[in-house]
Amino acid sequence: MQKNENSIFGVTNLQGMIEKFEIKNYKSCIDTKVDIHPQLTVLIGANGAGKTNILNALKIFSGIDRLRPAYLRSSAENLEFKADFNASIEIENAGKFALKSTLVYRLDDNKTDDVQSAAIKYKEISGKGSYQIIDKDTIEYTSYLKNSKAKINSSEKTSRKLDKTAVGLLKELQSVSYYGASLFTDPSQCPSVIDLEDLTLFDRNNRAAKPYTRFIFALYEEYKKQSPIFRQYISLVCRSGIELVDEIEIVEKNLPSKSYSLQPAADTIVTEKLNRLIVPYFIIDKQKLSPNQLSDGTFRTLALIFYIIRDDNKMLLIEEPEVSVHPGLLESMMQLILQESRNKQIILSTHSEVILDEVEPENVVLVQKNGAGTKANSLRKLLSKKDYAALKTYLAEAGNLGEYWREGGFGYE
Image (tube, rainbow, N blue to C red; front, top):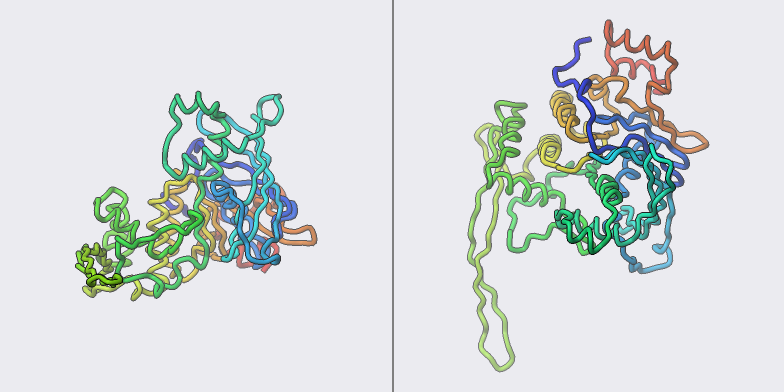
């Protein structure tokens, strides 16, 4: 079987990565250990096996930048959950570290994990020392660095007595983006016009809100700068690439408006202001379409490709990228994912044979659920040496991984 030119193998030593991840008492992950490929990990398994729970467990650390008491309305909402997360992490120019953590979290109104407290400690794997506790001040300061995009300077390190290694570990854990299966599957939610004066991208808890608006605004930022990211994006999605659209145009408009207010014993007060609007168009077959006029598959493919190349976090989690996407477009998206996995760790879950056809056995982790909860095994560990060698021979001479999966090669339908 001929492999694609963007094969990720042979690329050496991606720095700043999670190598192993252990989850205890988190939803179906009662005691789950996951080996994570340095570049691309593909989770497969039956519905309900726990693939999404593994992705959410990896994502939960991005919430430790928002540690705060929660104000809840009823006793039913006061439920707290405690889970343990252990990891083996390599950080650039520092080495490999073992990390242990216990997080207490609640579910918010959107059923999203809302971390309330975190107890985290670490030690260097090659050393003989004991675990070092990461204190609350370090967690809070790392959160400040993340949210403000600031860097540690020498005076801050002296005054705050920061543990630089702890900061590095926390930054690795928080440098995660998650794209769920339902994200960007309903273009009708996308606004056709965005008022920059009233733009709100975060909720009151500093969480990303309004994903459709965020996508259009982020696209506008790159469009306005005509940045290298935008030029790369255009080359991928327009005529020179997968021909999803012919052209993208974002028009800026200034719209004057007036507001009126009445004051006691006073004349009507008239306030004038200039509203700055952006109007995005996706041009297909010479027709200018608003984003909410695009098909589900076209919109989701456009959004995912944009974020895959623009997202500067070190780990991307993608749940079922095949949802609403045509198999032909999915192949092209996988080529991009393979290419970008040279620069960041990407972990995705899938039910798609098309995706498996694009990867190697060493990328695949089979997720299963039994009486002991969710279990995750890489194919190299799951299969005997003889069976693994036979699989490699089969792939080299006869078939592909998707076909092997379809024929029941992983032991489940």
